[in-house]
Image 1 (tube, rainbow, N blue to C red):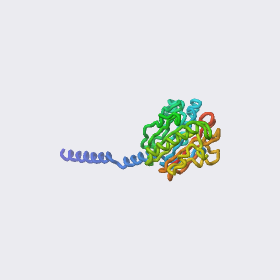
Image 2: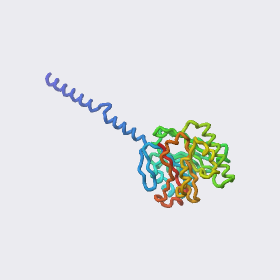
Image 3: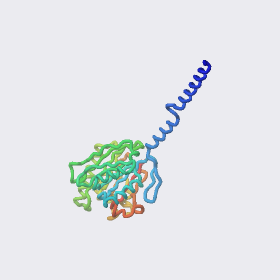
Image 4: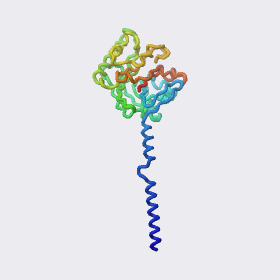
Length: 304
């Protein structure tokens, strides 16, 4: 009986040791899973397609896009805009002319991994951002600028501070300036006044930060009487899309005029990081783009 008891104890002890080994609190498999999780935080690149450019891994891809009275023709517009956003796969899109903010937010909520935010600016056409959640480690609250000057800013500028997964910290300022009016017009003077205030604000408050000022400027940047000469004359700033403005009208952002009105201005912290700048032209991939989506094309800049 004593021998049997000893044998039984030895068996239990062996089973106990074997079972403890199988429940290692920190197995190698857990470490591998942690590595996979960390990789998922990053933002993978993508190959080029017929209408949309290639992106490199963990580069910052920024777009400005006037989405014309969104949604221009209801659900049809929403579906097409959503397809463009998901196919383009940029990290952040600064948008102008949101006519129906609830539909804008609902669209963002339907897209896996995306968020949409907007600011209720003057004259009902709101300004906002769409951003890919995994592309940013932080995304701040929106701040309206120049609320006390409706002459220079019929719609307030909208600032947000964000940190990209690459570690790049950027201040975005999204604008939609006064439209219309040619050289020497009252409208152009209002755009010039806005440009002066924007530069003063950045020089004073954001001198040590990477800044991207983007949106519908409603004027060109190539003519010598451009209302944005104050930026062009300062070596601390550069219009990343200057080559588009100086090039063929085929690549201009407002094809119906045609003219190039949508710009991406950057501060000198970003000069050496510009990899690609282009107008995205979805008309070969999206039927009835100009009648059902927008009269503006998106403008893209990539930084790495």
